[in-house]
Length: 216
Ligand SMILES: Cc1cc2nc3c(=O)[nH]c(=O)nc-3n(C[C@H](O)[C@H](O)[C@H](O)COP(=O)(O)O)c2cc1C
Image (tube, rainbow, N blue to C red):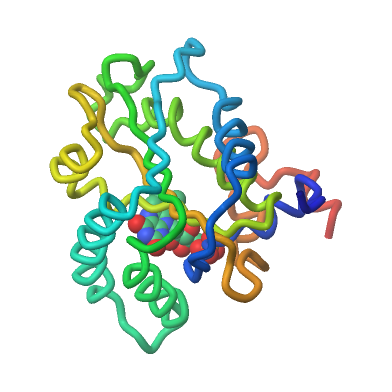
């Protein structure tokens, strides 16, 4: 296992969409899945399960579905701007989605979610907080193992077909699909994010946090 500090792993965890088709050793796959299992969830109910899909025929069908959703999604973005490289990598992922060594599909049970914001008349997000920390743990663990990966959600649009391909029982539903493989080239690397003072306030909305200023 590569030794990558947690801060380095977090600060270089960018989407890796160009992945090699080589298999992932079972013990490595087990370690990244175990990291997912350590995530917190509302009431510690762990209302998620993962299906680590390695069977070629199921992967192929999921890959076809992903490509069908990716194409119209990607067509909505211009190819000449700063998204061009990501879109090309996205095309590559869509072309090979069904050939990768493993696709980790996160499922969740809506009846087991702790949802504290359902009554507010805006899109509810709290339920997802019992699922996506596990996804992030998996991504970070992949980063530490030298594996490339990317959180994808486009397949959720085709949940009925995914349910049939993977025999997911009601009321379980799909939250994300993470393709994993050893990266082509560098894989994870520098990320581009908003500066901290755009994201963090002190004491109330819009106020600068002094701790950020002293770092300048
Ligand atoms: C909720 C969510 C859904 C995403 N869905 C997809 C997806 O379906 N396909 C894909 O290629 N990337 C997907 N991504 C990856 C994002 O595009 C990526 O994290 C973002 O553009 C930042 O890129 P970077 O991590 O390489 O800096 C998703 C990310 C998140 C957090």
